Amino acid sequence: MIQSNVEGIGPYVLPAFMVAAIPALLAALAYAALASAMPRAGGSYIYASRGLHPYLGFIGSFSQWFGLSFVIGVIAYIVVPFLRDICTTVGWDYFGLQLEFGWIRVTLSLFLIWLFVYINVRGVRFYEKTLVPLMLIMFALGSVVVVVGFSFNHHDFRIALQNEEAIVLPNSMAVFDWSVFFSAAALIFSSFIGFDSIAQAGGEAKRPSQSLPRAIILAITIVGSFYFLFTAAVYHAVPWSFIADEATTKDISAPGLLTYLLPAGLSVMILVGATIALINALPAMLLSVSRLVFAWARDGIFPRRIAYVHPSRNTPDIAFHICGIIASLGILGCHFAGDFFLGVDIMLTSMMVNFLLMCITLLFISYRNPELSSQISLFKSTFWRKMIGGSGTLLIGALLVVHTAKDINKEVDAWYFHSIWIWLIVMLMGSIIFWVQYRRLARSGVNVKELFNELPEE
Image (tube, rainbow, N blue to C red; front, side):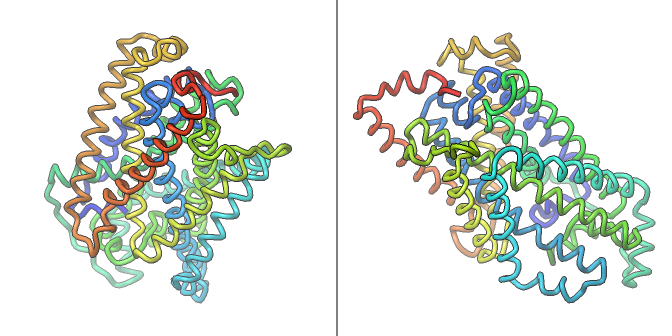
């Protein structure tokens, strides 16, 4: 994906990955610190609305909600090429060809979205029984990719490619370009968004003030390291030039590239693992975005009816269905735009802005809300808070500038294929919703200052 979207990155994907990991880690530390003081459903919305300003909390989380909901559809949409690769590898060429048809791809993607909406509304126990086994399978089969990738080299791949397709792969040279490098780092930053889902469920965790910060730091460390090993293994086995050439003509999967080196059975195994890794993201992301909608409704920024919780399942059913609808629009957007990277770019802009707000909140919460600031149990020293918040603000802000400049300068067929304009429209919509509802709350007699200074009930 990086090779097709950032032309010229060539062999420098891994260094770009490491650069992207630094601001992501700082954002994770900011999240962890704020979660220790404000363990409530809605995570980032609660942190910024109570620790910075209610408008910034809503507008940042609103764009985050839209971006993540949209990209849930993107993930469901790109699962289908993985299923196609599995069919092709096991010799089911007919079924693989069927998955190339647009209406079949859209139908399967919509089925996945609403399957996981159903799993989420069934309740946390059903969710846990689905997600934990998928996670274990993902790590186990993903580890096979790591072992296989480091067991072969480029010479092995060239021989396998020549034997199977009679293609002689020439040696390729690449010229390093700083602007291309940082554009790739900005895009790779999107790999690290998952940890914020931990914060959104808030008080639903056991001992949330302690468990949420630990979970966030463990997630960014373990999963980030696993992603890096996975990527390094693939590039160790497959020449970057082949990946770049293939990515310009079709949707490819990293495990699919390794099928040239492996027997069919092992190829299918790692393709299944990669497919599960993608599918595994869907229920967690749906849970995350539903809690944002729930938190807005509970504060009165959205209609309070949306905060309805099912009496026996204890799930915000209406919020889940709203998020499912937006995710479905993401699938249709990918299909009609012909490029799922539009959804990725919208999500990336939204998440960068949100992570930036988390770092700024950590910087200023002691001035804006001293009482909640005193509840932070991680990084009690203001020096470390300023170091983490300040460094994160600078680095994430720099990546946001690079990403925005790249998007504005990109040649597209119409203005609405620039993700920044779509994001700005979403921000405008969010601003209108907030100020209309905020003033309505004030006119109804609600003490809005008190409301946004205190944490909602658990």
